[in-house]
Image (tube, rainbow, N blue to C red; front, top):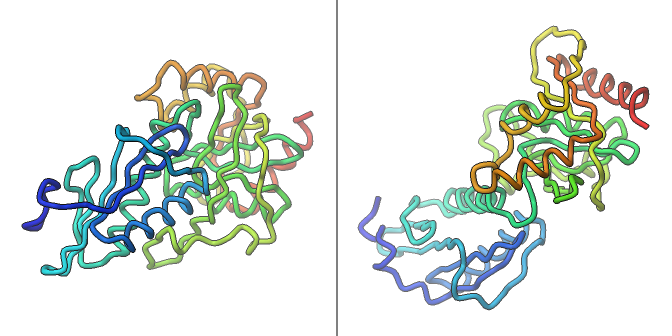
Length: 280
């Protein structure tokens, strides 16, 4: 923490308020160029789902100050010190993660679930899982086998239970490298296409990698499926009743499987074959 880590010590003369997923969020800086960078980054991170509004009472604020005397960048989250670094890239990466997480938790009329999503013949295949559990690896294999890309991070459900695309560049991680937003790989690199319109859920696959495992899926009941999905639902604490209502709508006509998986390519092949035989 630096000597300039108190929000009250700063004069953030440059600010805008954006709206995304129904949330008003103020962005601030003591330099105009840095504020423009924050706006551009927010647009990229939230896939353009933002607009600039007039609002003096935002529900959240993010500010980045440049302290030239100490050669530091300082991030404030809701007027509270969050982090400082000599690297602007590090501070911006933290801003990205905090912004996206805030929107995912408090979005209006949407429920965000940690999951990979692809479209297969008009239905969504949803793979709920926490970060680092292989969602992106499996999504890439689906795409290579002809599925349409929807997301490798969030399944975003509306009130009717339909899944909306969140087609950010894929978080393909390289060994020994720390992944950051700017290193995302476009799905087109894998020969894939991006989903456009919301679609109903056809299949939910609760899976994790286990070396040499065999494809032996367990069919779960509707109730067990809801319980499993709840564990990955980001907005549950903020909007429990709405979240549960949406999950129930989303899974009402879905098949829910739970299984271990081995090689991602083989797993994707097995899941798509199951869809061809079971979804109508």
